[in-house]
Length: 476
View 1 (cartoon, rainbow, N blue to C red):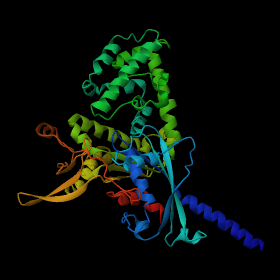
View 2: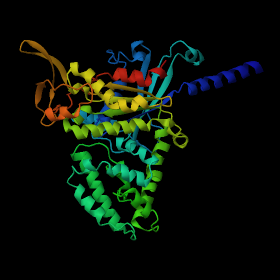
View 3: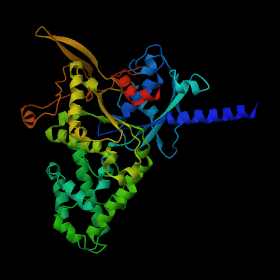
View 4: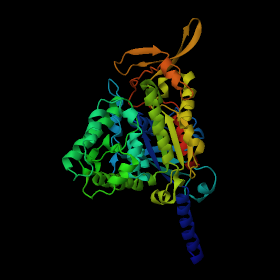
């Protein structure tokens, strides 16, 4: 072989590798959501659907790579990050396929799963520069608690600003039976005195009880720090033993002059340590490496819970949306080097409403997000909303009422497994006004999973639309 031929082959190979890198044949897809949104069920249903794609029946017609018969196959592969727990797909499937199907447990920590999607590239530059007629896209699906995402705004707040923001939610806090004990403990605390570790731990536990009650029992959503809800390996660590103070601006200024071992200074120090040692490493080591982000939202449960809870969910979602406005300041952008270019807010459990209400669910979610989207200037990040169900739990039908057809759904009630057919209710297509909540409430039904066979792909609603939005441009 001549020197010219060898040089050409070497340059050709380098060009192919450059094409692969520039075409991003590796995507990190992050999945999160607020409490109870169904993250584990979503990932399990999505993976089940992908691993079964390519069978005789195409259940993903709107996913162009299957619609054009270019998909060759999808396999699960060893995950690249050995320090991250593997997503427990097997256990989730066992629960869903058991004699009495059950929804899998909720997300409590970060986990990961890798899929390899083998496909035929369309005629174009990539197809011409590959040695074969196939290409492979590696998709790493990363699951993490939504509470971690809600912590991000803390990085832009001083301890004083955070305290002021938290106590602006005092009306919500007062709905909890745990609030008064926390307020009394703060009133007795001498912030100029030498800090006592046991006292700090005791008050931090009172604050933790307050947050856990508000989210897990009262049905609210926005809680900081998020690790108070899911401490994990931080349980009992000093970095988590801090809490907000109810002080005026003048009082904050006064206590900032206190000696370094005072209660105020120790709380301020621990707040900063939490931001630096807990929040920043997550967003630096994981969040900054995500390419696409899915945020799941259970609007129906929020409607059931009431006016205050629904507004709190809206507030939490808009805080999340602001987290993706990467151009806010130069230090923020340098810190995270953002890569996320597609953000999807997905209203989950759309199978829990009748077909004629599904479009209203999308409109409602879009209405919730409008305040932030209207003024946002995203740094190349596209935002979309849709309504989906990764594992369909109900069947749609039509019944006659007073001679008129009425859309209904049929399924097994979650609380007792009883078969039921009902019209679940009308979904508002915009955020209900205050007077509406005084006139009526919502009573959407929760359903248990349907019975599926082990060799059967789960039925879904709009996963093909979701896959086209998140992966379609990488499979051309």
